Length: 305
Image (tube, rainbow, N blue to C red):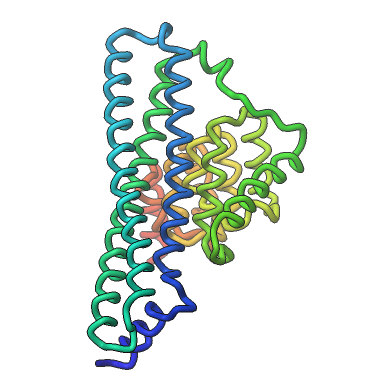
């Protein structure tokens, strides 16, 4: 048996570790699942408040989706509770078995590994469920029409400092709930912020965009692609122009769909003039108009001569 396997077994079976790996994953899933359920409650509340203003055919469709999501939440919750009970059962077995015996070690290790695989599946289900709920919320919002657009936001902030306080308070609460280090997990802070975005007014969203442009400390580590859908095209344009030279191809490709053709054409102008050298144009090409592609093609053709 390899040294790596022995070390892994020792770590997972150690009394000091106390099944930490599974417990940490359970805590992550618990937090994400609670956020998803909170978002669903907000979506249902939004639907009930605007039901009379939505076309009957759309109401029926939304009601069916709400019913399906309710059932999905129940199923995921039952499966997750079963796995939490399995984790508790493993702890009880560990306390009763002589873990110095290789056979007992193998039994417990197999149970822990199976539990982790199943927890990975639940974590993925919660992520998918969150996406479905966010889509539902957006569709309800759109179906409510212009009436809702003037009334939809419920949180107001007086300053950038207020926004920072709310974001950091939510993130700090998340870190306090869990028992591991979030320092290098940029997606965790992004998830926390995204949960707040649907409730912000345009003014607050614009302030957040300005904080991103100005490299505000509280905006570091956020995934722009998850924030852009909530911003106006104008603010997406501003952030793009400010960040286009510092983003890698993947990051750039993820936000270009939210940028206006006018700005992309202006970028092509600057590229042809030789003023843009640090932008990864490979990430931009799929989103350019045929005319702009043609302009770059002939420009590159001339450069080759």
